[in-house]
Every structure is written in C-alpha cells, then in structure tokens.
Length: 206
Image 1: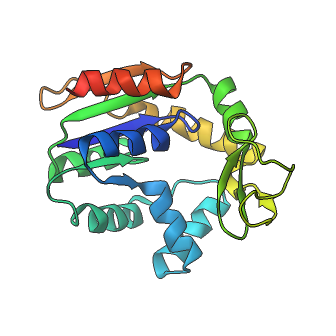
Image 2 (image 1 turned 180 degrees about the horizontal axis):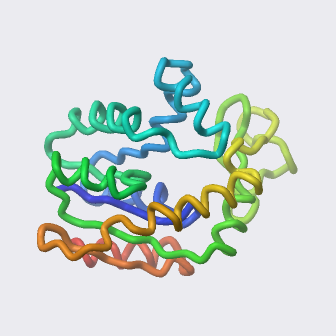
Image 3 (image 1 turned 45 degrees about the horizontal axis):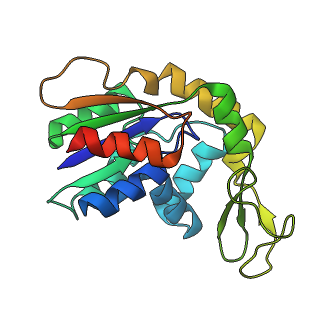
C-alpha cells in the first residue's frame, strides 16, 4: 500500500504520517527529513539543495527525483510519503513509477499555518523538537534534555514561511486534483485535534 500526505506547512503531515506508520506498519518517508539529512551531512545533493533553500526556492526536480527514488526503492512493499510531490511534474514522475492507493489532503488556512510554524524550534545540540504552542520547554529557550540552545530552522522564520506558502498555492495546490480511478482522495480539516484527524484517516483507509 502506497499513501501520499499533502498539505501546507504546519498541517501536520509528519505527525500524521508517523501515527499512520505505526498503525499500518509502513515506513514513513519525509522529503523534508531526507533533505535535512543530506544538508547536515554536506553530501553533494545536500550542498545543491541548500543553495536552493537559502533562496527560498523549491529544489530543482532532477535532484528531488534522485533523492526520493533512491529512498522509495528500499521499500517495495509500500510506504507513506509526505512532502512529495510538490509540483505537477513531480506528480507525473511518481505516478509513472508507483501505484498510489491513497492521497490524504491535510487542509489548513494560511493564518493558522503561519502561527504553528512560527512556534517551531529545535535544540541546536541534540536536535530535539519543540513547539511553543504544543510542546514548550520547561525553561524558555533551553532544551529540557541537554540544556542546549533552542533555535529555529532557517525556513521556519516569517520571511521563509510566507515564501513557502506562496509556492504551495502556486504549485502544490494543483497536484492530485484530476480525477483518477487508481487512487482514493480524502480531504481532512486540520483545525482539530491530532487524534480526531488520525482517526478519520484510519477509518478512510480501512
């Protein structure tokens, strides 16, 4: 079974994908986490991707394809993919190579998206994630686990959030909009609890 989760930043793609992964016993693949791995480890792909992200742009498709395909090949029995595809050419690439069973659209308005993303921080030492709305540190700006300094990812700052939202509406909003009998589509209202959203997705798939 192959499942795609799509939504504007802050809609909870990663959270829902991880929960779904446990229920369905399928691997969760995040294009964002793949890029961060390559960037942090300064691979050739990471250096190229970082140059795009620094400008607030989407990474060119040719590099995204190489990265995603190399990862998906590891899981011939199915996967849960979030963060890809983000453009119509990427959708076409994916459908040419893989049978997609379910597409989950996580719907969230831009104002709430901005509020959630602006609140995201992580420890610069141990990389533990925090959110000033949902998961606050015990001491402002300090990691509970190792005492490291909490910082924002570069693309979680206001300037980059607005750029990414614009890119989402210009490009990603168009993917998986055409009717296709090969997969089923669910639109989920994400202005609800994590549990309610998860239950609706599971009920739809099962």
